[in-house]
Length: 389
Image (cartoon, rainbow, N blue to C red; front, side, top):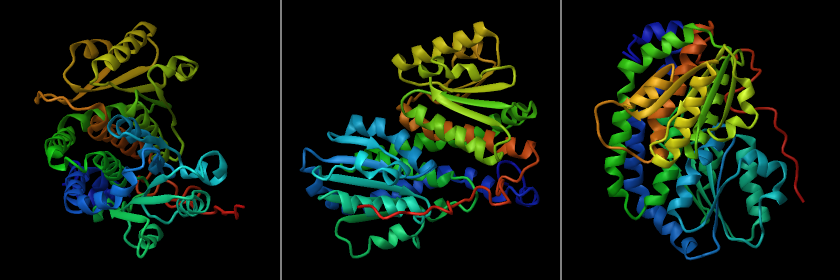
């Protein structure tokens, strides 16, 4: 059984690959942690001379969902690393290298790439080598045969870390690849205390495993309403996850549903105009008590507006949220431990993946390949990389 359904039934609907890849993620997170326990010392040895440079700049990069890894991870990394840490998409670097790469600044480029073959991923590495005097690379990639991973062999300034084998998603949308690379970016901050992260990994796996019985029926009911617009909101790391959530829903319905994302405070500054009676807003509620106050204020505003519909996702049971939101799902009904909002992204992202998946099916589409004409491709095609001088 996969997501409570026989594999043959998913296969008949063109949904088997995506269902399996959503379902297996908690296992992949455990495997990612084991990879770090095994390879962490080698990575630490590679980084040691870099980390002696106080002026070191760290850039997380990728394209599409791989770029959103940086949006989710960088707020946490800034808090835990004494360096300048930024998220800059490969698509930005390639389009205008001079705006993003500084020749005189020692730079570590962390490239996140499912296939390791997209034109921008390769070009961003080439441009970094060309435009920065002291450049180092770490690759988080899911494909052992990808160009990025193969490039690491024999290059002293590159360290490539392969994600678990099953993270190399075969479906159209990135699921396990995204979450494995995001977890890797966070564990990158804990190379000195990896064993202390065991409890956190156990918690996020338990939280995510618990969604099956209660969240799936709720999602099935929600998509029956055929909302025309889906809006995802969150703060800090959860804002980055909101961006990924919006893309996931858009991708798997081939654009039939309009999607938007924003930060909780940013939403009032114009983007709230998108809300109408055909809108479902998904609010990722933070654990951080200071941030939570702003989340609650927005929920109160939605309740007073009486316009559109709101699904609030919280870590634990929350009477105030349940009262204010049209729909409420707590990923942590029984446990007492709370976790950092960045790690909360892992069980939370399951919500968006399931909404995207079941909405695709409700619209009569095939989640494994929602764009059969090739209008949008799993690995980007048609990009011409121009020489840079």
